[in-house]
Length: 354
Figure 1 (tube, rainbow, N blue to C red):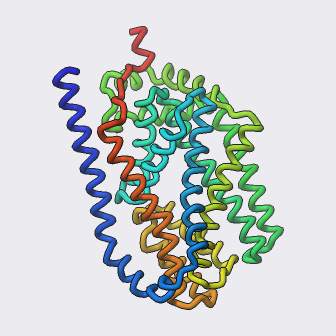
Figure 2 (tube, helix red, strand yellow):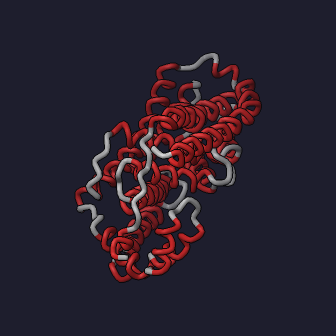
Figure 3 (spheres, helix red, strand yellow):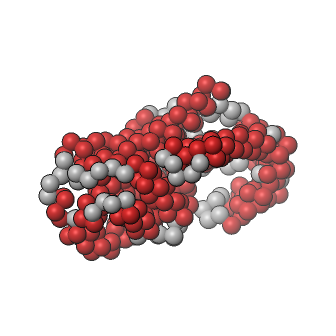
C-alpha cells in the first residue's frame, strides 16, 4: 500500500472514531433524563415479571434481525450473496447511526450501509437500491398494518381502515410500476446524477464523467435497475418480512407493559406505537428521543395505566429498542473500523470508452 493509501486509511479510521465518539457522547448526555425515569419507575421495576421481560428483549432484537433479513433478500434479487452475519452487522450499525447521530443520522446511516456493501464488492446500483427499497417496503408495511390495526381496535371505522390500507397498497404498486418503467426511470435518474456534484467523497473523475455524459449514465443505471425485479413469490416474502418486523416491535412494547404487571391496553398501545414510529421517522431528534417517550407515556396514562408502571413500561421498551440495540450497533461499528475491507474504487464504466 502506498503512503497515500496508508494516510487515507488512518484518516478514515480517525473519522470513524469521531463519529462513534459523538454518538456515544450524545447517549451519555441523555443519561440524566433516563436516570430520572428510572427513579420514577423504581417500584414497578423492583417487581418485574422476568418471563415477559425476556419476551420483550427477544421480540425487540428479532424485529431488527428480520429487517436485516429483508435487506439480505433484496441483495439476493441482484445476485449478491453475502454472509448473514455481514448483512446483520451492517443492519445493526445502520440502525445505531440512524437513531443516535444528531442531524444527519438518517442520511449517514444510508451512506454507511451503501459504503459497507460496496466494500464487499456489491455494485453501487444494487447497494443503493437494496438499502432504499428496504426502507420503502418497511414504511409502506407499517402504514398498511397501522391502518388495519386502528380499524380492528375501533379507533377508526373498520371499512375506512380496509379502504385506506387498500389505497396505500394499490397506490404503492402503481407508483412502483410507473417508476420502474424504463423511460420514466431513465428520465428520473437524470436529476440525482446532476446533483451528484454536491455529494462529498465522490471520485472527481467519475463525477465529471457523469455530468458530461448524463444520458449515457442514466441509461446504464436504468438498465441495471430494470434487472432488479423480484418475482411475485419473492415480493410476498419481502412484504411478510417487513410486516413481521413491525409485529415483533409492537409485541416488544406490549411485553414491556406486561413485564411490570400492568394490563395491556392493546388499542391505545397501537396508537402509542404508531406515534413512536412517527417521531422516529421525523428525525427531529435522533431516535425520536423525547417525543417518543412523551407520546407513549401520555397514551398509557390516558388508558388508566398508573404513572409508575407506565413510566417503567416506556423505560423498558426504549431501553431495548433504542438504547440497547444502538449500543450493539456501535459495538459492531467499533469492531469494523479496523477489520472491514477497504473499498477499492473502480471508475464509472463510461470511462472505459474514453
